[in-house]
Image (cartoon, rainbow, N blue to C red; front, side, top):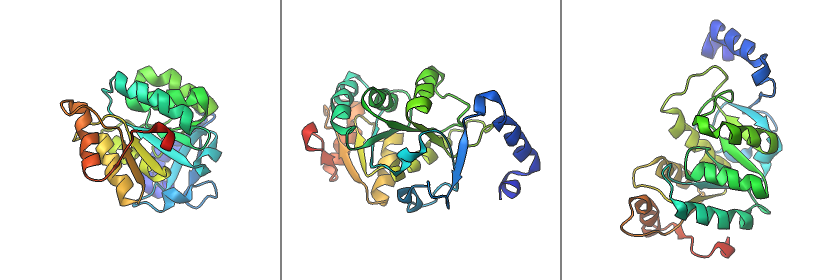
Length: 230
């Protein structure tokens, strides 16, 4: 299947990279494997292959996604710090390891429990590069997954594509701060298409980073005002 999709040269390059020291812990599952999560099978255009590093069993746990702006403020950090300890005994925290709210959520989850980071790059790359250490920690104590094979270059469209996996894995989506037009709002749209519960932190009406969350609440998302209610 991969030979037809990629071509023989690309397939051989991929196999050589997998044999390298940096990639020795990278494995893959396909759509038909028992480890593949049923929640992800039900979304539109589920990934045929998932490359992973870490504890694959986390894919079968109950998951909550915490997402938000790459420009997240201390408001997101305070709320994530308060939320995560209340969630980790029941859920695995899922996020995208991007700058801002995503990496805050992944990092905070490691302190108290387990986390899944869904990457928009291959597993032998770190994007953004400053999250390289956090990415290594998640590989050791959580789970890294991506649909992009070792050797793939990073493309802008990888990240909206990644968002459908975040939405597909999670029973609930929590949005901390988001602009009206943002990757977080794309993830919410995908989550709603698949019947997921969406919760949003209300924010200041004059804050650009709260316009997305406030709009979601106006449209019927659950306002997250009592962290103990989750």
